[in-house]
Length: 429
Image (tube, rainbow, N blue to C red):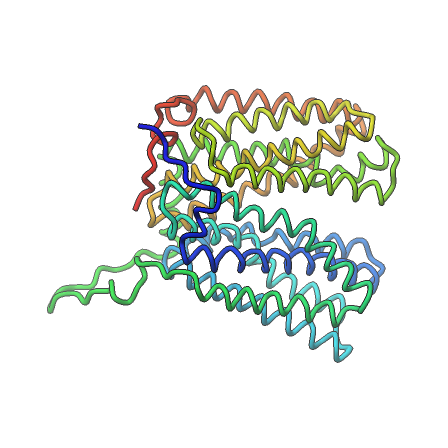
């Protein structure tokens, strides 16, 4: 049966998405502005690179508890959790603005507040995607996921520039008033997201007279059950393996080693580093827009595998590029391949998961982020011993080989054109 591919803006025909998308956009801009503003504040006020590194690490700390947020989403409803977290972001930013205005803000307080929000922010993308799968028709989900990624990619460019510009021109307090305003508007827009029918009060039935109310499993049991669920689903297990693979072998070249490349390969300094980062972010944004068109006919699982192969191939070429314009083009190509890979990957996970498990599945997906620091730590000694080109080549070739192994091992569930994940448009509803 031919796959129905709706128009580029079809997700906006759903009222809930018309509220969720701008809410996510404003929150993403606030995230990027906040990280740059507070990172600069911590560095300048403390004159400590160690505190800056700790501040950066706190932004990812919450990925360890993302599965628990998935449990909370499956129990409470994604919309309710979505609203609570956006409200917390707004309250924390207002508190920071008040402390700064009263001259009571210190780097230590920033770390404490950043740690609180850092426990939640890595799970934000999980809640966004779960809400999309819950509120949109199945044939619009991949396009909507791509549009959702646009909010993040645009924030890395425009949001970051806006935050730095306001901070430089007007100072910390006005900059944080802007951040707080964005969070508050995001919170107001989030109230328009459709409620989860599985958690609606109208669906709660009282047990018959004399009947015993079944005991609900504990959150710990819910989590164990979700791990077993993923292990028994080949489509999910293969997607998880690919997610970890790109985090440990593809992302380190761009999210951790670009300063080394700018300084040691291209010798272009801090300004040049900004050009490299912008090249990668621009490619990512283009990839999000292309995948949002929902015009790929190969199926989401095949698309994620093919684009992962392209990603590692581009990485291999980038490893030996010494001419800056070539490097910029390859960085943009890598960013493009990244989102053509990761958006369908999220679609595969959502499509393969029953509604009762979606929050926990997407929460566990965030654990793959820890492949990134592992890959970075392994790359340091390798670069010292054999240099960046050889290290990046090893990462790229190993990544390409393992992607092929994933495609072969799960060929019936992921690679085959006839696989249900590549043809069936019905999510587990």
